[in-house]
Length: 232
Image (cartoon, rainbow, N blue to C red; front, side, top):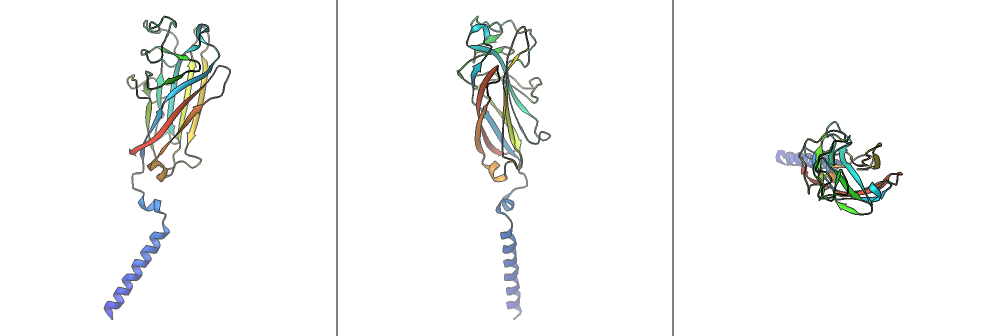
């Protein structure tokens, strides 16, 4: 009788445990202690659909640009920025700028630009960002902390459940005698109102297009992809 009573009690405890576990969401059960993920934001191309103030009546502009990405908790994840061309220059360009084709004094052709030079961007043409010379910075308006490189138009973010991801594009046309023209300034936020869930972040593969309306100076678009690489 004692054995039977003990067995019955064991069955009751097991049944109670199953009941408790069944009441807990599966996501909470499998969620590991470390829920921070390494997420890559990969930019692919730039299309300048409209340029109002084209250089020397040509079909292009002398451009510098930034591509920014951060999460909804910047205190845990500073803005990671890719920059093309000198940011908000005030003159004093290197002597070698513009010597590739002789057309623009301070700008190099796309894909053949040098460090510190503006870049020729042609209206209506899609330019591959894999060909662009870029540097990385931890500040949208600061100097670069990393070397200039090609073929790597991406940034890495550490993202937690509940975070959203914001990407931003800013591009300017350099003017010698007046304020620079803001060709485009647009952003896109992913993750909805409540941010990404753990399960969404675990296998995140999404993207979009940062696209701006014509503002009197320019209009442009940059497609991008967002992919989780694994735990941070």
